[in-house]
Image (cartoon, rainbow, N blue to C red; front, top):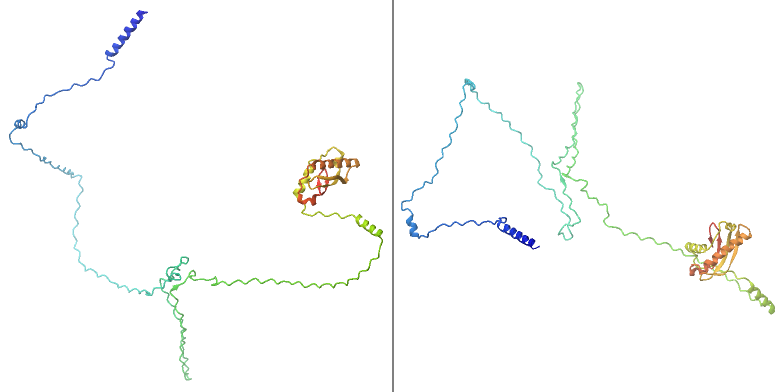
Length: 373
């Protein structure tokens, strides 16, 4: 155990020495500094060291550069030269005097007629004060002037035919009447030099002032003719009633009280279609029809009364029934009666202000469709 420690320590020490001195981590060496010996001298000693002779002159001018010699043109051999052409001999030509050119004087051009008077340009409209043109109005363009003035057409002249005298040998020549020169009609005035286009012509279609519309005539009022008043009939004198016994009065009063009073017609607005449909659906929700029963083909009409809360007042009575025998009609009536009493236990949803319209109800229970009156 102790020997192992010794070997381990020795190996570690050897490793550290190799790392430190083995050259693995070489450092950059600092270069050596060279030192030169310097001696300090004064100015007098420095001046004594310099030479005392004259300073030699140094030529500063640059040497001249010789110009390049142009290359001489190469001599062309005689064989390559073109043959010389002989010069033509001069021929004597007689001198001729130069011909004088003919000068033609052009005729003077006709002078154009120039009008000194410029056409008047209309000024733009101004305000009432005359200070500035109105913004809504646009100045009219100046009229066009023809570049060439129009020439008046020549006057129409009639030439009288020549008068030929008839010469008779024996008869005396009649006096010749001199033709009367007819005065030519006056030529129409020359047209204006202004050309007025259709666009420049101002057309005023709107009236200058609008007339006040006439008032609508009043409808004639029809006065009803007074109806003739009927002549009052003479009042008959009352006849004294005969005295009757008290038994007659009692019988008359009993008869008047026994007469049945006519039922009052319902007043107020009628029920709407929606209100009728809601009442029909409310009753139909409690009506059960057995499709296989014989009473399914029976149509029964019932009537009943309702109070102001919508509940059934009194009993439900049968008005009419069609189809089937008495037993099946009775079964159909019972089914309709149960439906009315069952759904009317809490009151039907009907408007209270129309109570006179739905106080008495008559309904027809038909398996194909329920009707309400």
